[in-house]
Image 1 (tube, one colour):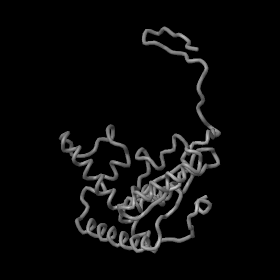
Image 2 (image 1 turned 30 degrees about the vertical axis):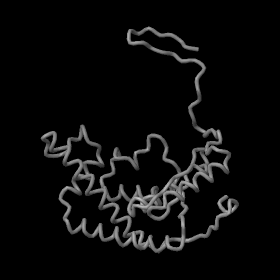
Image 3 (image 1 turned 60 degrees about the horizontal axis):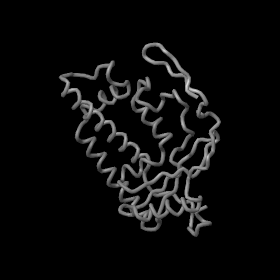
Image 4 (image 1 turned 180 degrees about the vertical axis):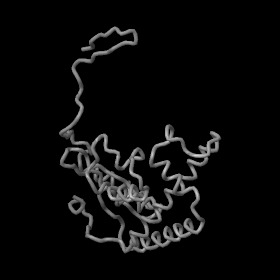
Length: 219
């Protein structure tokens, strides 16, 4: 579609140490969340997160990150700088990176694997499950580069699948121009009135139960 609109498209991968990038991003999230949770605990006069009020993964994040050494944060920031420079070199030749927004189908309702409600006992394993589905977008978060997700594709279930465009810093204008061009090419709307296999349709009748137990039907 991009080529039909006059763009030059090639398969290219930035020369970035992705393992280093994901490790640094994980350290960032663990330490930041741990400090945020600690601030909330101090405001409430608590010494540790109570299970009744804090989700399981958030408790494990606090446990793992609250005593993190400064040297770990320094290593994280050094990785951020290295990855940012490597990506910057890539953007000296290319304007955009195009990837899916998700690298796996949308999880089913009730799936807790990627949520902080997960009962996974290993917070690192939980994070790398997360990166397994959010494989592409963290690069923009880590480097501070502009990105946009547009529903241009469809999963087998009929649920939209985002296409993620990422560009160099301060190139937001070109990113928005591209999104606008794609929207015009689709007739002014990304929504094609596709109905997923599992969906909720408008009901012809509503049964409403009032606090006093009375019911009535609205047509």
